[in-house]
Length: 318
Image 1 (cartoon, helix red, strand yellow):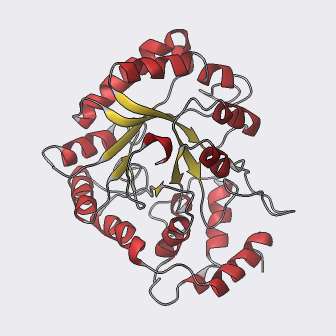
Image 2: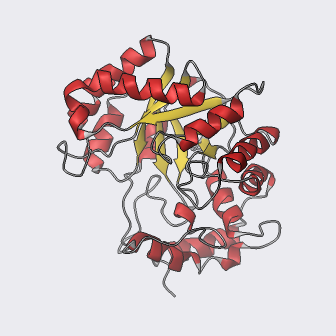
């Protein structure tokens, strides 16, 4: 995983599922899903305190306790507006709580989980580049010196792009979580002309040029790229409605060994060699099994990729 030197499975395990963010589950099934993932060779687990108000970290901690498999564990800190007067203290408190939940003395990667905007507070709990490269970086370095994290990283979704790129180009952080899926490839390439997509700023090639670790997130578009959304869509969620409509055009990908839309979504991400690990949100054993076994599926064939490209360039109309 870039300059970290960490070795991770290409298929990783996102903690939103076991944090009960993506559809219903319970702690017993969450723990069982981690155990099944370990049995199938998944070694990278990405969680956050915000996934179910600590539920993901707690479930992962219980699941990994006493296990001997080598794993790489990442978690996050989200700073609140009223914590910015004492960033060092807030980061330290958050990390200590996470480590107690995870039943570990340290994590491998600690990500910044705020949105980045031109000026702090432009959206709730957002940070500026000066924040992230100043007091936040200092606080993360202090946690690193204390041995509570090996590496530090950034969550790169929904940001003001010049701010995000400025932070990345400073080359102080080791890893980045990048939004990339069948419906939005803008973390890799410019959006097609005339297509309305949130532009994720082509940050993957930038991160790779800096030898950062790249972790793919939202591989399944928050559930739109599955055979059925596992929860009611939030009222007014225009992106989900658009993604669900676009996903209905992708039945041609279910061909040969690829039998489900979620498999197609995962295979598409695994085909990108610039992503070290992709971490879909997993909430049960069946999802853990499907995620892990996608590494053995063949790539999407060229004729399907060509048809996908046409749809993508036409905003999935027609």
